[in-house]
Length: 387
Length: 136
Figure 1 (cartoon, rainbow over the protein chains, first blue to last red):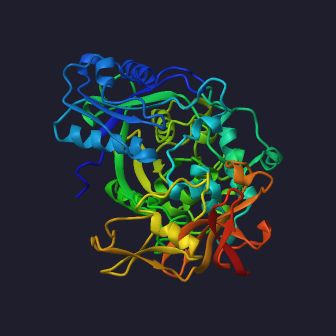
Figure 2 (figure 1 turned 90 degrees about the horizontal axis):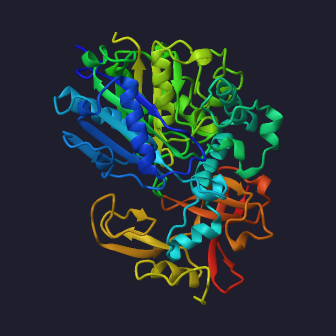
Figure 3 (figure 1 turned 60 degrees about the vertical axis):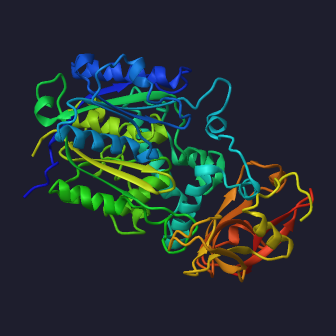
């Protein structure tokens, strides 16, 4: 018997605002994204009866969004936070609510505006935190937020398995190739291995080009039942499978938390719900806060063995023309950084067959979300067919 | 411990850690009930739920879990000293701690190298726990 949630719901609307150095409030961006998604789906605002909200780094969009949108008759409303796994999580909670009759059309929205005028991306994303005596030590050590943590993760992989700098670079280069086909991408100019290797270090082994962009913007998707989605303006992106898995890495040696993420558990459970095998996945839209995140996620899903990620990606497998097209919009490294909405956005575009020059086989699309330091994970399996 | 402008006054909760630093020890918390060691500072044991937690000196020994080279100044201490070797070390008590490594060239560090606790005298008077490589 198949899973009761398999193909029960679909994404029917997608709204993407301007991305990058757009100096507007996060709630205005979120409001615009929801209106864009409604228009995209061919829905009237009065039909929207659910709203799930996720704020990014600046944490400046919240429950009040429903009043900005003038929504007086919502049946579902909450603010959620699962960091990079939030986008996938919102779609999952929306699906469960819809399948159980709590709501018919649920908008899931993310907005962030860390960039401010006259400040670099890096400076914008480095938030001043109130320090106590113990956390002041971390500043002196130079543990520079997520950059520093993921750099430690990448170095452990390099020492343990012989992964090379060029193999990390292959991720940045292949995604830049994809970004060349995406008008929305922030960085489209071609990138060579020499460009990558000569780009400034942030924290070794990470060059600046191993790290994702910083973007202002908002994205909204609208989820509805599979039946309703068939009569709307866009081809449905069916939710064939989904799952979450979460772990923590707080100070203990009992998990090798930088080499193995909860993605493996999440992937196994989502594929089981979808009655699908890994080999049926025709493209990947992976959360790529860093080049290393792509590598470790591919390993954790089982596309290659643990430790084999470097050789797996170095030959252009993920690039245009490769056998496993990955992050076909350029991803967070080259298109824009909207947390988990970046991979989800491209997954929906691909499921609709609207990828234009970058459209690839879309039978089964893997969309992942990753938050914390490989702590929080969500999986969505999208398809244009409710098979 | 001497006054330091880089280290704020410890709270009641973290004072025992800094008393340990002054004594030349890496002093951390251990659950009195199930003997699980903890860091960062806790009030309830995440392993067994006990709230009877005591501070004890660790052996201060372990191995490198991972390492990186900081290439940008993010604190005045880094001026003129880049690259700083940032690391996580697994100490014998089962904890994974953030630190800096000393006693080695940055390019020579490998996962698994043996380390032990040491203390760097900060120019402003404080003491910073770091780990020294003992064998590579």
